[in-house]
Amino acid sequence: MKRILRQWLWAAAVAALISLGSLYFHRSELVWAAQANALVDLPEVSKWPKVLWVDARAETAFQADHIPGAISLNEADWSRGLPAFLAAWSPGTKVVIYCDSAECGNSAEVTARLRRELQLKDVFVLRNGWKAWKERS
Image (cartoon, rainbow, N blue to C red; front, side):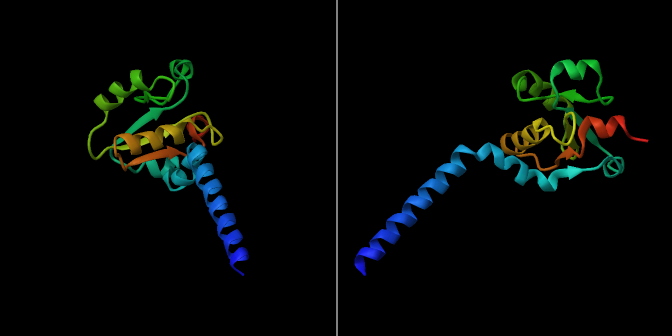
């Protein structure tokens, strides 16, 4: 009986270590789960009095076209884009981040980083991103 219990405890300990290791090494993939409640649609955003648009696409895409008044902030150019973001943002302003489409993960990554590093709470991801903006009526 002791042998079976000991084997079971070892198996449980190994399983726990594997699970913790998986969580640690795949933590960046958890951004999607954490941001699921941060999705907003254009009709909802249009009701907000103060919105700061953040384009999380590559700088070349931003230069080609973007939402009027948006600033560029993405993972690749974070240190260059952050000062512009801080200059444009003020308390009480909701931040809406977009990238190319629903499949693009850049907006979720920027959202998570702003929430984590700057402790901002009113940061949202535009559902379907730039595609939704271009297809609006």
